[in-house]
Structures are given as C-alpha cells and as structure tokens.
Image 1 (spheres, one colour):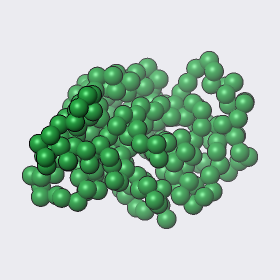
Image 2: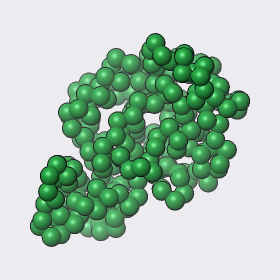
Image 3: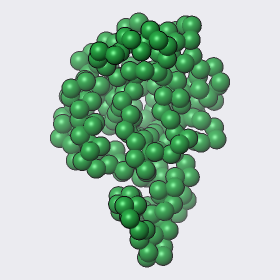
Length: 233
C-alpha cells in the first residue's frame, strides 16, 4: 500500500517491481495514479521522486508504471496532476491526444520493451482541438498548415457524436477520448496482445481543468472504469 513519506522519497518501495510481468500490475498502476490525483485535488501532494537521489537512481534505466497519451494543453501536465516524479510516467503528448505512427510506436516501446502495465489516454474538458474540429465541420473550412492533420484526426469522433445526437462539447470530448482508446487498440497489434494477455490495460480519462480531478470514460478491460468513475472529492 502507498504511504506518506518525506517530499522526494519513494511512496512505495516495491514500485520498481510494478511491471507488466507482475500479476495484477495494471490494477496496481491505476490505483497508484488515482491516489496521486486525489492528493493533487485535495492539495496534499507529496511530490515524490523529484530529488537528486531519484535523479541519480533512474539515470541508468527507467521503469515507468504508466504511459500517458495526453493532450498537449499546458494545463494538463501529467506528473503534476498525478503527483508523480522522475521515472514514473512515460508521457506522449499531442494536440487533442491525436494518435499517429510515432505515438503508437512510443506506446509500443513502453509496453513491450519497458514492460509498462498501464496506458492512459488523457483528455480534458473544453478541449481546443475538439473545438477547432467542430468549427471546421460547421463552416466547411479546413485550418491551414499542419493544424489540418489534428482536425482530421478528431473529425471521426465528431461524426460519431453527431450520429449519437450529442452536441455538448464536453460530452463530445468524452467520445473522442473513448474513440482514441478504441483506435489505439485497433491500430496496434502489440498493445492489443498485451491487453488480451492481462499484462496491460488501457484507460481513457477525462480531466476537469477547474476541479483537477480525473474520471473514466472508457477502459479495456471494461471493468476498470469503475475504479476511476467516482469523483475524487
């Protein structure tokens, strides 16, 4: 069980063993993340693994217990909102948490080489990428430059929302998070195999910018949703 400690120290000495080869590792990793988010929300953060000792300890190798595929939004810094430190999280960020070959390759490296047992797709309310895609669909005008690639990646989620009669922006964001989870599993045989074997899980989370809390939107295996569905505070 995690326990309080001086700032910069390990929260759980056995955390280095939290790899895909440990039975129940995906659930343990998820619990670790949620405990950190609760500390962040309640302003009781421990700021673990952020001192010189930890820096030296992970200089030679890394064993992150979670991959965060998150939106690039400046208010969505994973190590802060999950109260973690150096070597804990393998973070990949793009606008609107859009997923291309480089993102999938990064995730596959984490789960197959680093043996990371949990992948989180992290979106947030009032997402600018979703708003931009929504505006592009409404006006029929595509954004210039490479921003168009971001919009194109979000459009399938918007069409799914339209088919379901969903118009609320934040509900559309939730659909986009869930769609990203589905797309990653459908596009990566490596990730799908690790999930099927029970060595990894994928959870889609939505972050509330003002409240600071995360909640589940989707998960594979699906029962993990219940572990992050309840409000933190």
